[in-house]
Length: 231
Image (cartoon, rainbow, N blue to C red; front, top):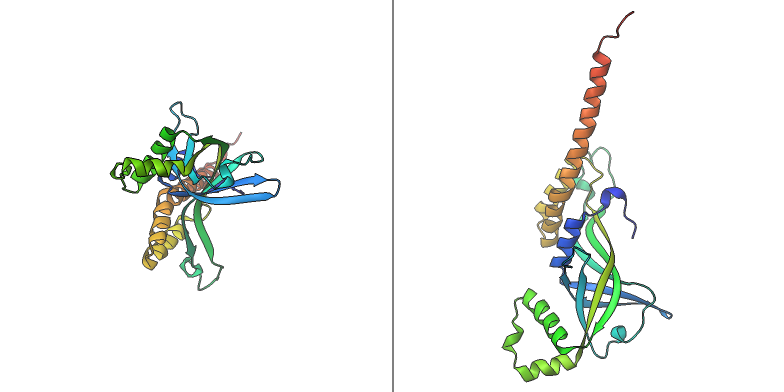
């Protein structure tokens, strides 16, 4: 994934996205080509501060757990995204520009580990069910046992994470504020999520850059105003 420096998502924020993710597009490469599978997911942190793991499960008839992938397996986790109307940019009436799309995404790479142990699978299913407000213990033990025999656990032990937030960090704070206002006025749930992400990520980035530039200019002007010493 192409990630310009100013669009890099800090580790603390991509970990938040992994922890809040509900599904992931799991992509594995084979001699016949890549294959993608959309799966429910939960994120497990490493106790030693490592990258952690994505915990998933598939039906036993799914070949993902049977086949040996070529290299790393990729899990694509999508954050908020929204269409940005060009009319929201300051000065559009004088200098029209094109629309764009703002988004947050995480590409998590790792080694695929298969788990067919009933206890491991039960804990994985219990965790992802609890994330959605369901208690697996409400299901009769014999039905749970049948379900566990029909699935296979899959763990993606992460080896690297590439995370991107394209949220106008390279624009002025005035532009960012105007886009945020447009998103909130349109009012979709995704729009609000993107507006919040821009408020948390883009605005501080832009304001810090503008303060730095203003400070450099002030120092330059001060230097020009100082009298030149004469011999």
